[in-house]
Image (tube, rainbow, N blue to C red):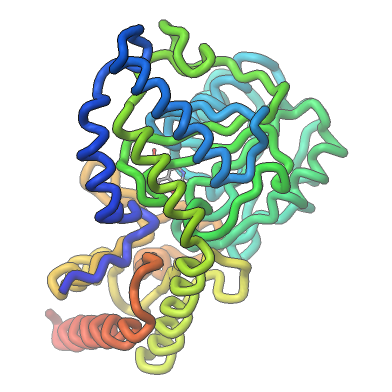
Length: 383
Ligand code: PLP
């Protein structure tokens, strides 16, 4: 049996989605075509917009702009703020690279940029964001939950403080990892725009959205067509968008059960690990975390080696490292939390799906404990 504990990388689509996609095959084409098939595809896109709005508690007046994923969404927001005003960009040191790299590009072009450091718990605190705010700020972008540690940031509180101090700043959150793990309310978050990723909540990879509050204007990144209210040119990814609608409705229907299951299995897994495996530390343990994520350092072991060992044992996980050009870089997230390079390199991320029975925690913890013990024994004998 394969245990998929890598839901934060991509949440496995349901069997129902496979059927929905098969039925939707007939709609593949251009939703801008005037003929019947085009009109049916257009109706499916509009239906998906309603489903995504419902999933994130947005009002019918807020815009949902479909993109190719959260990477495009985040790039769009940063580029829009960069091109529409000269103010500083404020973000956190633990954002996904699809925020950090466009922001670094803005800095290279002379834009003042402030990176807020998280506390040791992994949380980016409202007080620290406000303290760092230059008077002239064009964008504040802080993620809702971190993909590596699962630690959540209090976006509502950040929004209140930012609106007081820098009312003209565009306020954005990357909510890619919140979707499908807990209820999201765009209205309550009180941001101007929010980025979503379909495959983090059970849709196909290659689709996402930016939710934009009524009255907020973004400059498009992609030009050359009137699609998505002129905010994102290019023929829509019809199957991806239909899959997003399906995943959104599945989330709406089963979210509380899903989140409860995630929390049960994750908590039992962590309790078993800490009681049976010496030298393991859970990052952000006492912070407000997503219910499914566990980021664990195993003393004396390389996280990448453990990922490979667990893969051979049928357990799919990730190390806390972004892999670029085949060479894993140590996690910038854990480093920003003040952890040593040794601890960072010994970390593995377990991210649970919502449909596993809690009893599986015992099996999975047993497999992990066995792999860690074998690796430590082999290292002790110079292996
Ligand atoms: N933002 C966060 C927090 C993520 O975890 C990811 C993917 O891992 C992304 C953005 C990028 O999402 P996508 O794969 O939809 O481009």
